[in-house]
Image (tube, rainbow, N blue to C red; front, top):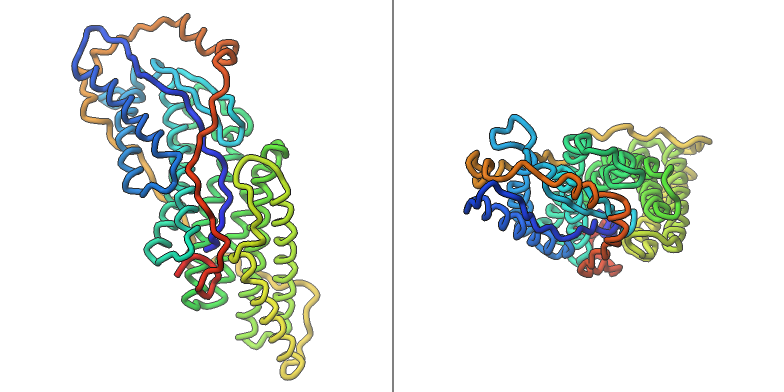
Length: 420
């Protein structure tokens, strides 16, 4: 597991009062409005700080989504809630600055909350992995956080984005290209944990190579998905994904070479190690480009981190050993083209966690639901949602996130990563 990750900003949102109209005053309905306000405020208080524990954030997320579900589905669950369009929500997107979108749509709120929760899990993984010493239990937390983040993103996109009133705009968090990048990034980073553990336990180098190759392909898919978007906005993130792809290609060819040497295929091993060195040098150049590129998200110099520096001497030593043994023992021809890597790992591949919404909160009874008024001032709603009205409201301030220091100190284990 590399102990350094790129992270984009959280989504910002405006306060919501949940002042829902009622046919007549109803104590349970009033409590629902109050609970919605408090649960949302509590969740938004937790999101900016990745230092919180999962067992603090997860119940807060479940509570708010259980309450929000009543604005999405009727109590019987057979139709959309009559209150789906009763509250106006304003959210920014992680990569598009501080100008928010506003919609009278509880599904827009649901998608935005699920996405922000996914980003929190990814940031929590970074926080845990950034420690100088990471135990096995903490490594499992990193792995779990990344899988849960991927699962939330997958669930939001596959189950709810297509139910929004409008097609997501280009570069937004609902854009399929951005979703693909986030999903593959989170999944690939979870596989970094698996690779580091395999290195620590000295698993078969063929397996490590195959896992590394799969991980490199995931990072490449993530980068390819956003290359058509604005370079000024997405270029910094893209460079991170490209450098990680090159880095894990270097890993894949290094361990493939070690595996070939074990099979007395010394010529092929030398060519594989040469390709590993080439990819590592490419990753080093990309690290520098990443550090010099401005854009949303983490600003860092990854080439200074131990996770990146540690593999270079391993490649050099293994290549030197192969060349020495080929000169003294094997006398095999070194192929012009690099060998084909294992296409798929036999085990160890990561998949996003399955996720589904919690049941609606018990307060959402048919009687309480009936207490809310169906009528709304549509002209007022339309005016509030117009472009001119949104412009007059102005941008939302960016989320002030708690500091997470990602240490560049050397780790004291065999992989140079933060898994013990």
